[in-house]
Every structure is written in C-alpha cells, then in structure tokens.
Image (tube, rainbow, N blue to C red):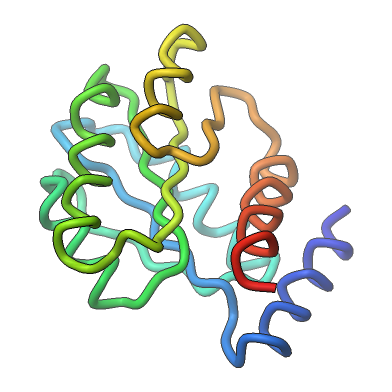
Length: 149
C-alpha cells in the first residue's frame, strides 16, 4: 500500500511539476500534537511536501499560512471540541483570501455525529481516531487526483 501511495505522489509530481503539498494545523487552544506530527511525518515518507503550522493558530493565521505556502490541502486537527467553529472559520477565511480551491480535511477526536456538519461546511474528508495513515493518505490523494489530474 505504501509503495502504491508513493507511486501516486510521484505521478502527481510528474503531471503537476511539484509534489502534493499538505499543511497540517492545530487551530485553537488544543495542546495535543502527537497525532498530527505522526500524520506529517508519514505523509512526507509517502511523498507529500508537508508544512507544519505553529500551535494555537487562529483560523485566519492558518488560512494565511496555507496561501503563502501554496498548499493543495490543509489538514486541520481537532482534539479540543472546537471543530464545529474553528474548521468552518478556516474554510471561510480561505475563501476570503483566495484559497477557495484548497482542499480541507479534518482529523482528530471528532464525534461521528458531527461529520455531516463539517461536510456541509466544506470539509472534504474526516479522519477519526485510529484511522490508518495509509487510509487517510489514500483518501487525500484521491481528492487531489480528482481535482488536479
């Protein structure tokens, strides 16, 4: 599975002239960073270019960093129950400053009952606790392939 994902990121590079670029961010006051650091590291191993935002960003700061770093995808991590306000605010901010095309995915401790709320707000995928990295990378690559290839 990992080799297949590496081939897909290499194909993206060949066709787009650059690797798929992912920014992982912790917005709000959530101090738990292990999960999103694991995602960042594994994504690099698979072939993504990865930007890691500083902790405690506002949605506005995260959106600005995503635009400045010219990312394809923002992975917003939430463990502190702020996902229903912070992630939609991030999507709104991206739209305001020219980042409407950036794909937003969410991960962390998000109750399954809140997934539809996030999808309606513009989130393209939600990865709950225990999601294998290969599954989240596969879904993220599928979103990128649908949009860019």
